[in-house]
Length: 216
Image 1: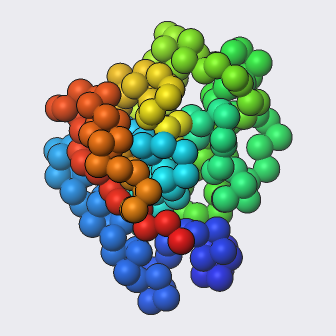
Image 2 (image 1 turned 135 degrees about the horizontal axis):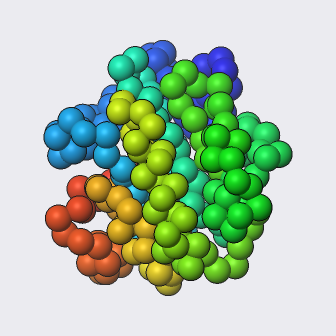
C-alpha cells in the first residue's frame, strides 16, 4: 500500500509524515523486546473499555515488529463483537477467521492467515461473529493453535487484539495465553480508577504497562 493508503487506515510507515507516531510504536516495541528477553513472545493488547483505540495500538505495534527485517508479526483479532482489523487492513476474509477455526468450521490453520500488503505482517481476522467467546478462548484447541503459531517460526511475534477489559471476561481469559500484556487507555477518556481496575485483572508479572492513546 502507498503511504497515503496506509495513513487512511491509520497505519504507521517509514515516511516522515508519520515519523512521530512510527517512533512511538518503535519505542514500545523496543521496551517489549527488552522485557521479552529475545524470545518470540505473545503480546495481548487490551483496551480498558470500548473506544480506547486498542485495535489501533495492536495493529501498529504489529506493524512496528514487521518493520524489522529479521522479524515477522502475526496480528490476531480476538474481538468477535467488534472486529476491526480486516477492514482496517483491507483484507478479504472469505475463508473465515479465528472463531471459525475454533468451532471446527475451518480445519486448516494456514487458511485463516492472510497477507496484509505489509511485508512480514499477517492477519488472523475474527471471522464469524459470536455473542459469547470465552469458552472458545479457554479451549484446548485455542491453546494448541497459539502454540502452533508461535512454534512454527522462531522469529514470529504474535499480537492478540483483545476485547475491552471491563465488563467482559475475555481479556482475562486471553491473558493466560500471553507472555506480556499492554493495557490501552484512551487519553482523557478512561479514568484512573478504571485503568487501575483493568490493570488489576491481570497477572502483575505479565503486565508490561499502560499505553495512553490520544483519541481524535
